[in-house]
Length: 239
Image (tube, rainbow, N blue to C red; front, side, top):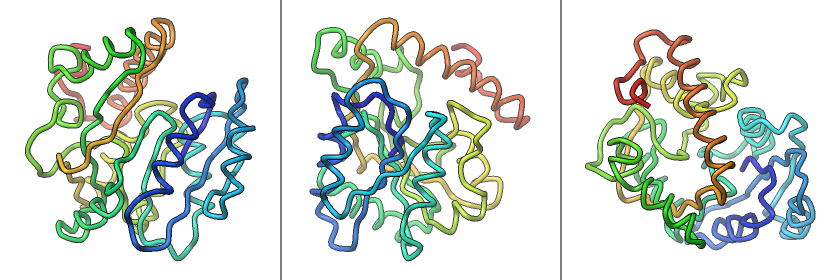
């Protein structure tokens, strides 16, 4: 889990992982960036649980955090589940994701980013994020039929697939998931969307934070398209 200034949501996000119905061994690695709120204190309390580990991420950048967390995971782990500080996994998420990976043979599977807010502003943003008018027709925003996909929200990966493509590319501050899913597919792997996986997502809490987030998404999407020719989409260009 990449973590930066997540004091407000971190405890709930981690507890949602620790209370999963999955029967196998489970650990969660928090990659801690240089937060300016109480994130580190919250993480320290959570790390009293032996299943919670922390690793430093001095750059604060998401791809660096993800790679550091993956490196810290047990070498015996066959599956790597990405989680975020703004996301709340439902109780059967991990068990369902692993079942789908095994049934489909996919290298990565993910589902719907079910945006929901706790303030009037967040609720308004969540409504827009669930609408094709607000964010386009991507299945991971609005839902759809299970099947192969260009990318998915978060992702449950086979560790072997991450090793095959070299993990997240640290050059991409944003859209690193989209870029890595492109490499997984380019090397013969399958990325699978399923509506069975729905994750509650908390939108940014202010206009300024939201504008910064989506400006960065647009900027880095353009960089990815320049790096990987042929990945351009009318939907992204329109954005």
